[in-house]
Length: 203
Image 1 (cartoon, rainbow, N blue to C red):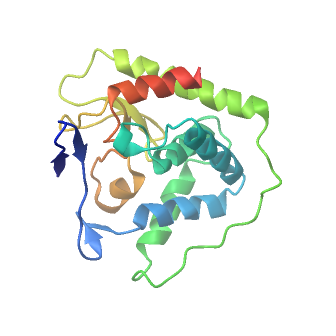
Image 2 (cartoon, one colour):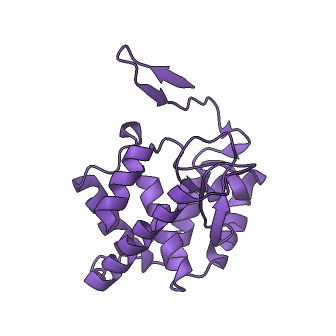
């Protein structure tokens, strides 16, 4: 649904009722990400720092046209997979495990406390540099037959989103992909001005 304010601003909204949404169990992606953290706990401190940075910089509100908190989490996981610190197989292993869970009453695996493992300055610099390099997707000429280009944790690589998506960057929802094989953008509320500001801040 799209909500249009009196000032003309349009905000995309999601409304769902029940346990499932478009064939995907509610909370599936959250559980999936938590399962990955349980298998690769060293990723969690970096995610916490990046999310706090995005909050301080005002770059974590989807309704303002930026990436939401989940989007930043997935970007960190993708970067760690891309550089070989986290196995790409973990997303599939976690997905298979979570698909076997019956109902919302079960708990995901516990997380190990790695609060003392603060990410280094070089790690943070490399991550933000990698995000800044996503600017080339804005200049991608081959948008024929699809939407914006971006990244996929499921594929562990670049992927093109559907042509129904208006976002300037495609960040695939691995939960939807695993549960029903459909492409869906976690960054679907991202606007071009917000994305350009993020890229500029990451340089």
